[in-house]
Image: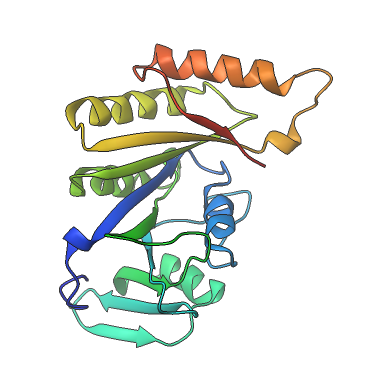
Length: 218
């Protein structure tokens, strides 16, 4: 795709957004981007990796796509429906949404936000394969690991967290940030947020990542 756009990978800073299914990952990305681009619902709705390229000179989001035969197409205005249709079809192999993420100012590199499928969809094991492939493809960047505040420490999450911990250990050019999502759905009487975050920190450290940076969000 970057060859089609005549754009060097050396000019982007990849941010790989990963999580288990239904952690609110796509909703979080929509909040970061500042507009409703990615489909989000309480079930598997991301089947492929979708990249969002921050371009401060493009106020409106547009779509670049390549089909399975390598043919390039361009859509002037990105919409949630188009992205959702892309996730459902086998005709499109790659997609980049390009536009200005207003909360982020680029300097030497442009942020490339990459939404990946949840890794624990028992109905379609290819989702985990897509996410692992994305992790293997990039030599540097940030991993934004989203954890559902209501489901901390599940078997699937623990298994995947160990994979990510090895990636960080083997590649010092990658850093990691944890977003503990859906904090607003906790019962503050029975589950105090500060205690949950402390438990989450212990859980992350027990699975191979020291001194994790944690941001609680809702």
